[in-house]
Amino acid sequence: MYDFAFQKPASVADAVKLLGDPEAKALAGGQTFIPVLKQRLNKPSTVVALDKLGLSGITVTGGTVTIGAMTTHVTVANSAEVKKAIPALAALASWIGDRAVRYRGTIGGSLANNDPSACYPSAVLALGATIKTDRRSIAADDFFQGMFATALEPGEIITAVEFPIPEKAAYEKFRNPASRYAMVGVFVAKGPKGVRVAVTGAGQGGVFRHAAFEKALSANWSAAALNGIATPADGLNSDIHGSAAYRAHLIGVVAKRAVTAAG
Image 1 (cartoon, rainbow, N blue to C red):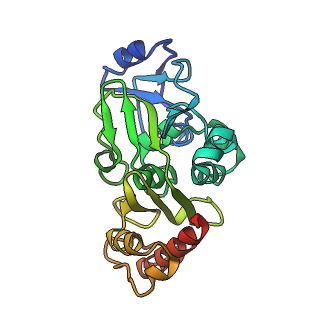
Image 2 (cartoon, rainbow, N blue to C red):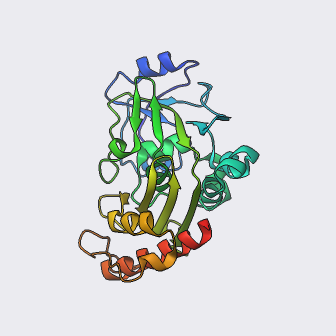
């Protein structure tokens, strides 16, 4: 690691002020950022820890589940409120990484990083969630802007995520056996925002919605409705773990499993 100052502000306002330095970086759970620092791939002037800002917790009000940005994956996975309101979201959180990652990683950190193989972006996009920050509310469709790219402005901090409670939802993923990242993950949902299908792990630009699947499932919510719908391989990842054509095939397989699981 390079030398840097370490700050633990006690309020969002203080954190935002510290992050006004363009060379400062925020630290949430650190599951991506700490390895980056260890490999000297980033040289921040200041690391601003967000764990003392009071941004963790889960509330269910009416038709919305609100999760604080610093809420860990294991908290979401074990939450009785989430299991009752959006069981697919609890299941997704329980499958992230390994136990160490789940106990330290946070939903806000995952979304701000927007790793193209991360699980949470698919849930946020498929459920039509709203990302709340210290400055504004950002719709899921506007938030994800490409690999490791989001609508967040410099120094902007995610404070919470609001999920509309769906009528039906499920998440399935085909895991890399070593990293447990999604080679292909599909989250399907039918709810207040209509039928939405989000795919993670497969696209070169990160998470994306599958319009053809959404149209078919809007007309007939069943795995059979996806028969014969091919996903183009153009723009999909191709690496030692699987070609673009293989991932294109997997999207259909995993999506059908998700629809079946949703009921």
